[in-house]
Length: 150
Image (cartoon, rainbow, N blue to C red; front, top):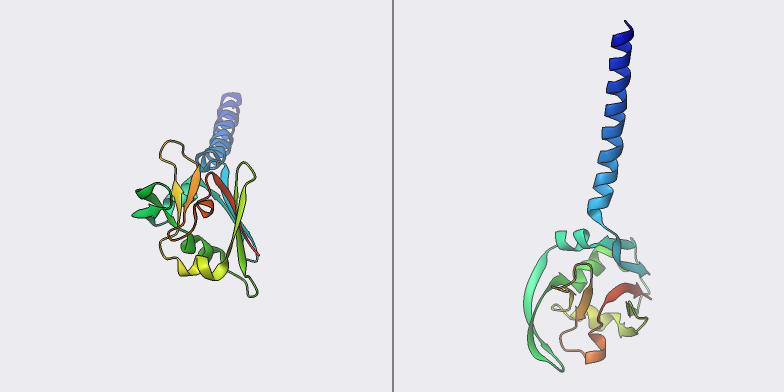
């Protein structure tokens, strides 16, 4: 009888440990939040690299104002904005880099840009750059960490 109780306790501990480890494992595979979309949106987004990689990724050759034609892999900026849902009254979007640099563009310009991308840095997962076709080089924000709709 005592032997059965010991086996049952050991089994319960193993089951509990498995549940706890599986919960930790799923969070650990997601990784840290690397990009946020906030402000005048219906749903604020806190995205991990895995979240962005799971979206529709496109490969485009865009004309960089200083570097000429360059191939980029990324997610369409408008797809992110559509996922967040822009609230009425929004007029400007602020793009902020990890070093504090920020650039504002009017919402209409961004929405008219079908090929504007949040691109993946091939050397560093979790680092993103903006590829803003038709915009000045200051709009091509490097190490993008947040998009704020105002």
